[in-house]
Image 1: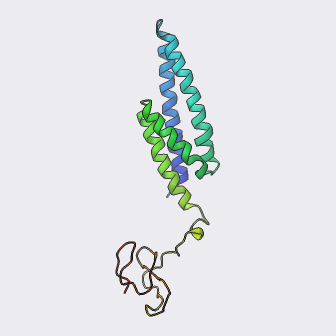
Image 2: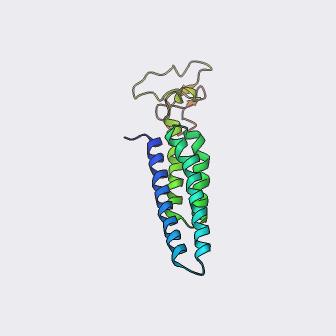
Image 3: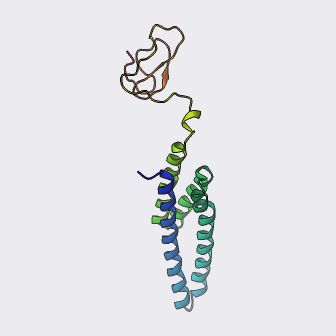
Length: 160
């Protein structure tokens, strides 16, 4: 299964390619129209600057493995793409934003910084329920619960 960071990188790249095709259409309209040619060429120029910014702040960051640094620009580019009626690239950028969140959670070493222990496998012995002051961990979600609790406070699974 591919890493979510690679998927995000590919989604951003496809969004950039689709934006590029849109700018080529604007260029063609700009060169073919006499009255509105300069307007279309102006929009095409702005679009090419846009593509450069997406490449610089989102794609290169993801390519270099800086998922956290690429996440906010990808969200901004996705929203602005939707507002400027670049619907498909905007949706791709928003999906890439979600994939970058997954990639951040998939990074090695991040699980060690979580506040919860790894999820135990089925049949793993737990601490005695009678141990005073010791939190019990849920077999389903792995989150700690208060000592003496019968049900997990997070997912509701019976702890006994």
